[in-house]
Length: 70
Image (cartoon, rainbow, N blue to C red):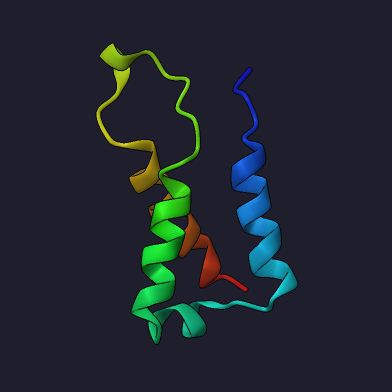
């Protein structure tokens, strides 16, 4: 079973608590950079030989994909 990231959950909670939506993010490049920096701090437990994409990039893609579905 995959490990659940507390940092990723914390990021999700911060966005929910502050009402940050896709529209808010699209208008704020500095916010996107801060999100990316935070996403890059999430520990990646995958074996290096199986890593094709950086975990921070996967988190960003997943986050922005899900943000628009509110």
